[in-house]
Image (tube, rainbow, N blue to C red):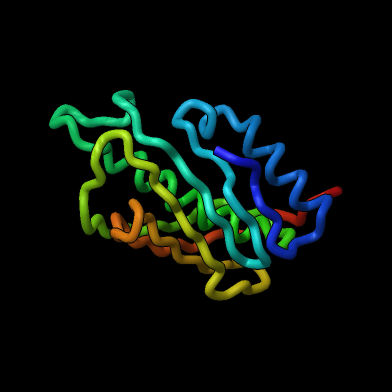
Length: 144
């Protein structure tokens, strides 16, 4: 995958988010990578491998949900906020094939003083794999 693209956020914040994501143990474990960041938006990707399948040989829903949650959380981080997930709902709409590149696109819907709301869509090419909504509790601001 090519380098992450900055689509208009503060350069230092962009660098901090990308670097933190590259060094986050869970993201490294499952292969989540940052593709792009814009104000209130994030695009993350993961390439499906055998390690991502469930006992039925299909992509595990937990990976898809993790990608959606990460996309929403990074959309919030792109605004300079630090927040934790307090609620997440996801609907699985299709099952991607093995070897697929999944793209999670997150977007902030409302940034309140303490609670932030976001949504994410996970795609395989032009096919929607899942849609998610989440609520996040603001625990601070980015320090850079």
